[in-house]
Length: 377
Image (cartoon, rainbow, N blue to C red; front, side):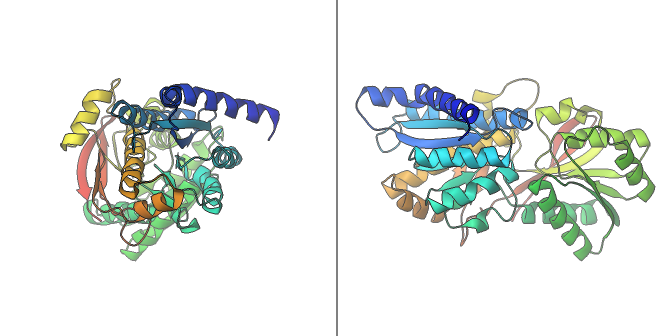
């Protein structure tokens, strides 16, 4: 490993040991090592901050309650550097540190790079927000707590056709993002199967300087809806589309709705809809307790934060049911999960490692997100 990467990983390892494992070590007990791999630096860092926080919150709560199987959790935080190669290196370091499981990553391109490392070492991996369909196909050790692109693409395509009565669509895809590519394909396929017409697919790259030309192409196509399966940059694109005077209704996926999304232009959106995993006003007791404890700032508690929190609790539940931290036994217990109830709702793994769970559609009006409806699997 190059020197700068080795130093940065080592710093996170030291931080994590102080965070969650020092107490157990002082008593001579071996803590349960769990890797938390997200972007602490780079372009994904702002979005990933909530996932990092959610995993920490769950680990700290579990340790305050006595840990799992009488042992503390040692949450080993590793920085994926916002790149697939950084994620691969982080996963290799996690395996070398003999973790029981890996929580992460957030972005699909990062998890796609990590999953083969976890699978080859038979280390259970639970991704929190990576929805790309190919991730869980990598092997039987790879799980997710979020829904997949196939599911949310179908949800948004049917919403566009049945609720918005859209007949035509333009998709705007980030060529550098496995998430954007996969979700865009899923939406296009289902929208056309439901009788709609995808007029154009427009491409961009996350770091490009301007979206003016792209926005002009959207306006020229005159679609009923424009589907942009991106992250915070989707708000910048939508602002450019609005400035061009397009009347298309904007649609997105679960990469929207973050604090950065609204800071970068989301507050200027007059009307849009996006799918997400959870909303902060959910009335379940676990959800209300989570919001009361962790609500911060003017925006609702973040879905990625709640999903990371749920992923750690799901892992703890599997270890308890397995009665062991043996990786194979934990993997088997995860696969056997039925009706696990977390902050973001109930999930089961029924014959696969993609959870059976519901989706939420949020509406943006006047620059604020509001609950629109829930969609069952």
